[in-house]
Length: 570
Image 1 (tube, rainbow, N blue to C red):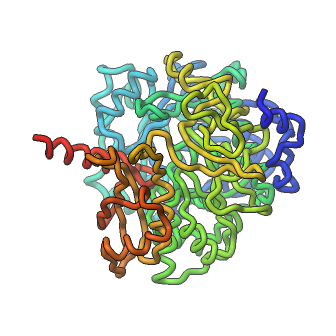
Image 2: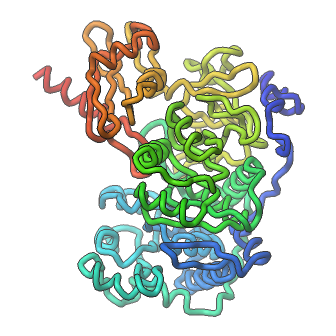
Image 3: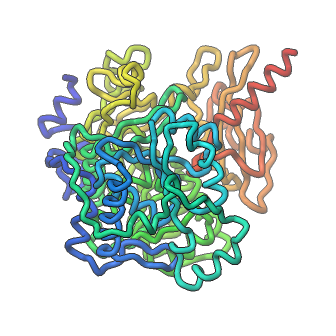
């Protein structure tokens, strides 16, 4: 055991001195079936709202009853313990109903991104062995799934009505206004309708779940290798992470919170922090099908939301919109950023707008996902991912040799241990072995720990730029660029350099109405970066590539630059 791990185990760990006063790192979490997170508020506050979807409200009692009926419906269709059931859905009430219904039936949830192309869907269906899929009667979704029937393990597509999820007036208008967008799947045994699946008494057969061993969710991720793999997240993993997060946000009042649910629930961040944690707290989730900045801001203002979870680009969009048209966002008491590094300028601007702390958290799909977070009421260090959550330990391992612990004060690869760490990758024991070291999850992220136990990510190992033998960390360059008041977004990658091997290149999106030249930005950076870190090139763009949850994405830019290099050789 390392010195750091020993100090944590003994209760005198360096970072515990800055722990929130009401949070105990050592407090045990009893492994429980994940669906019990929903059962508790359904018992205690059945008449309170659980979901507000475009103004249609669902109470906890109604939600629980629909979950039970869906569980029985799945069992009637033949779903049994360990069967994989896919969710091919945007944010909507069906997602939560189906998610917990699958778990109660004993199935394994397999999350699918609705924007996947057919090839990606087919690959995941085959790899996971998904036999049942839940989707909406929208052509954009159903048309991608229909070809999978008969050619993959997929046997059944449960079709839910988008119109039925809407309030009365919108329900009447939707089929008329969006007629061309609706799909008309055949009415046969391969296409049961959602309303028929839930047409029962809800008396499902309780599945024999061992929370520690039974997989609840297969969450696909590229991990550190870029090859999609299904992270096996058990009931105990996800239950523990929801409890860890709720303990960290100790100011949440049971049954009194209202949360913005705009991050896609098929992504692990929203699944845990918004869906699982906030439902366990009896919160009302103000759910939006996708992120549109004006609609999200309107929801915060009119619904008086108290909790916001987002990715950095979402907060950037909020800052830009509020600068143009001020809004009252003072109802927000808790907000967290995750999924990507949070630029300091973005954090500070949002805090000025709302008056509340925007805390940065950190984690991976393989850790369910949250591993660290800045404390809400304690020391909140700019640029830090904060402190490990309760029962979570972090070690910094030598970048060249993960078996060795990095000396204190030096950079190292973050390795995570805790009850939220996955059981492994689905059907990939070799990949699982490569991802683990001494029982800890390797992250591929390079960090430092300060004297107070706060962790600071320097960069990802795969994003590291090797410049004349020196390590250049893109995040350092990005943070410097973000300090310019005209900059809205920035991404830095390494490009080929015949002399240095690699050099940094910055891609920049400016704020609306602002102008800036490469020369002006270079001059601005001279006292903020050393000569090796200075970008060799700066390219301004109207928009930067993003992932499907809104994180800035580097891979498209890397591919573009690689293609340019190859073209230059020919």
